[in-house]
Image (cartoon, rainbow, N blue to C red; front, side, top):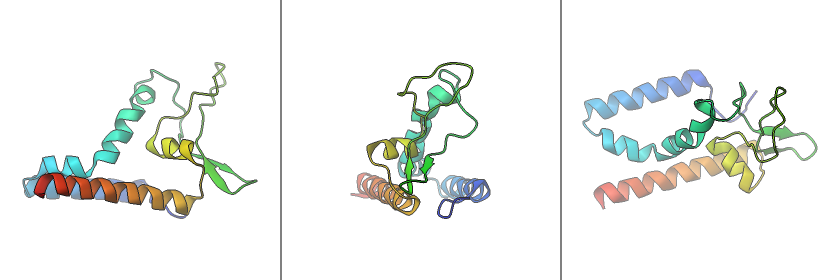
Length: 127
């Protein structure tokens, strides 16, 4: 099990809490700006989510026991022969395609990405 990433229960709760605060606070556009990485993840994932490309049950990164690093995962569809370039389409896998890293380093990288996007969104909105 993951040691750094949160599970579905917290993710669901946090998403609902953010939506309620944005609606009651009358700033849904600001929330969309703050959630840009999540929107990019959705846009990148569309081909697999809508079955335009094979979509396995789990699209998580692959753990390389030899090096201890996470690597981007590829579609492993036994019904068809899949080329090497059919990577699972998620933001996490895109980051890992640039550079394989450990789980804490990946979490830190994604948090820095989120912080930079939030800073840019706040600058665009209030700067």
